[in-house]
Length: 395
Ligand code: PMP
Ligand code: GLU
Image (tube, rainbow, N blue to C red; front, side):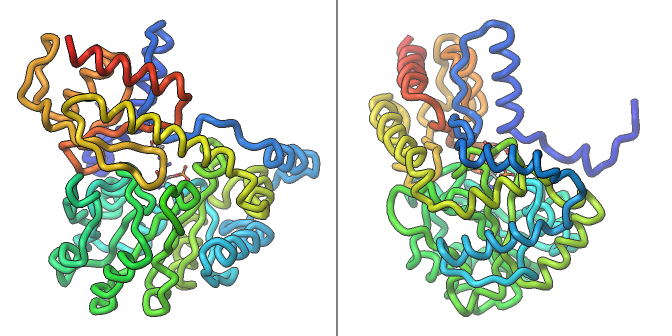
């Protein structure tokens, strides 16, 4: 028995990654599992980006990189923020990291003291609460539900604020609910926040391009909020580059400097080849990735149409990202096919074992009545998965 730290002992495993690992394991055993658990585009990285990476290798990009990113990449990020979000940042405000996950961890580590509270509208992305706790912060969950379209109201935000509140973290488009805050809804939340000038907002916009309802809205667009917002983004989702591990922030310079210092002691600058490839990705017009967004849109329709035919699934139509997050509490307390379903985790395991479909329990996202489906999968897989679930439930 080794003496592992209290820090790691009290941390939960990432449920998304755990389910992905379990799916791989079962597949290796020969089980025909349909994996709808992991939030990862099933496309290949576009060729024009791969070519830039090959070029970077041939050009001998192989040394340590500047901790906060190559200047050329920072400039591409600055231009992207301007072009897509109307946000003005300079080089001192940008930090490139090994994925948006590291960007988020940096921010938590540099902003939180023990006991500082971070408001997390539920459902939140799986790693938010654990990252906050790792930094000795206290997650304060604000529940939302299918009935409220998974949106936190200004009244709920106001009620959650205490003298210890340091930050609000949210993603829009949301992982896991697919909810998208409109500009007006963000403004209404901002109206609450302007009364509490010490609260910093972490706006996770990694799904910004996967939005089916309209314009993407950034919290930092409001002049009275700009100095208090850390805008988090990355290339994993829109460019199908999950394994390349590049994320970034646009932030007040003081916060960016602190993240740079933190990263300099923990990981150094992000991978050289990936950074060069991302310059090309971000400089390309957004229409180069439209074919993937169009496919997500048609798959969203497909999965919603099929899921609506399954009794007991209460669905809010997702507006962005590539997830559906049905409320499945109808099944709690029932025994189906000899399988006792007490909660969403049991239901998710039931689907894995009896329908051979991998999902993620809503517990992981702070919403214990729901489960998450990722529809970043082929049309055939989606159709087959819904058929299997329907059959498993009707037995
Ligand atoms: N934020 C959200 C909302 C996500 O879904 C993800 C998923 N990977 C991340 C951040 C982290 O992305 P990455 O580290 O791959 O850039
Ligand atoms: N963000 C993805 C998901 O939610 C990838 C897994 C992860 O990084 O946790 O499934």
